[in-house]
Image (cartoon, rainbow, N blue to C red; front, side):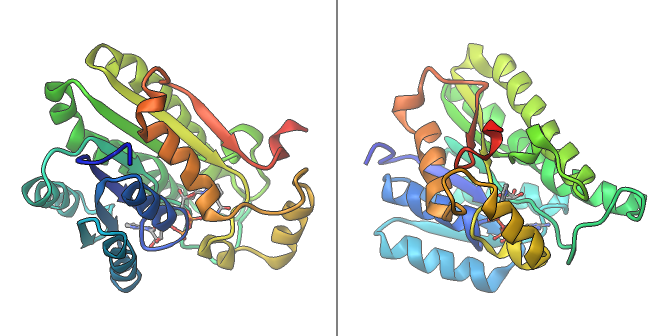
Length: 250
Ligand SMILES: NC(=O)c1ccc[n+]([C@@H]2O[C@H](COP(=O)([O-])OP(=O)(O)OC[C@H]3O[C@@H](n4cnc5c(N)ncnc54)[C@H](O)[C@@H]3O)[C@@H](O)[C@H]2O)c1
C-alpha cells in the first residue's frame, strides 16, 4: 500500500490500460479521479475502484475540450485534494483501420497529435504548479513501442507517441529541481478495445512477432505505471520503459 493517502488521476480510464492502471493505483492505496469520454464504461471502472475500498471520482468529458479539462481538474482538486500522480494515458485513435500517410488527410494528423500528445501536455499543465509548490509529483505518460520502431500506416500515431517521449525527457529535466519525476511507459501490443479498430491480420502478425509469444494483458502495463508512481522509483526520471515482450529487441 505504498500510495496510501495519495491522489492519482488517470485519463482514458474507461477501458484497457487506463482502467487497469486506475485499479492498480487504487490497489496500491491511492484515491483516484478517472477521466474519459466514455461515461458508461468510466462508471464501471469507478465501481471496480470503489470495490477496492478507495475513493473514486469519475469525470466524463472530451479531453480535447480545454475548458472541460480545466473544470475536471478543478473538480478533482476540490473533491479529493492535491493531485500527486498523473497518468496521461488516453490515446489511440477513433479510426476503424490504419491509413497510409498518402491516404490520410491533414485533419486526421491534427486529431492524432491533439489526443496523443497535446492532451497530455494540457493535463500536465493542470497539475504541475501544485506539484511544484508541494515539491513532489509523479507524471507518467503512455507512449508506445511505435515511438521507437514506427509502423506503416501509423505515421501520425507514431509521431505523436515519439513526441510524448521528447516531452517526457525534456519535462523531466525541467521539473527535476522541484522533485517531480516524469517517465513514460511504452506498451507493445496489448489486449484492449483499441485492437477492435485494427485489421485482424495486423493483430495476428503483430502477436506472432512478439518473442514472448503473446500480447500483453493491460494489467502487465499497469505494473510498470505502478512502479513509476511508487516510492521505489523516486530516483528514476526521464526514462521510458518498453513493455513489449521483447518485440523491440529485433
Ligand atoms: N493496446 C495496445 O496495443 C497499445 C499499445 C501501445 C500503446 N497503447 C496506448 O495505450 C493507451 C491506452 O489505450 P488502450 O489500448 O487501453 O485503448 P482503449 O481504447 O481501451 O483506451 C483508450 C481510452 O481513451 C479514451 N479516449 C479516447 N479519446 C478520448 C477523448 N477525446 N477524451 C477522453 N477520452 C478519450 C477512450 O474512450 C478509451 O477509454 C493509449 O494511449 C494507446 O495509444 C496501446
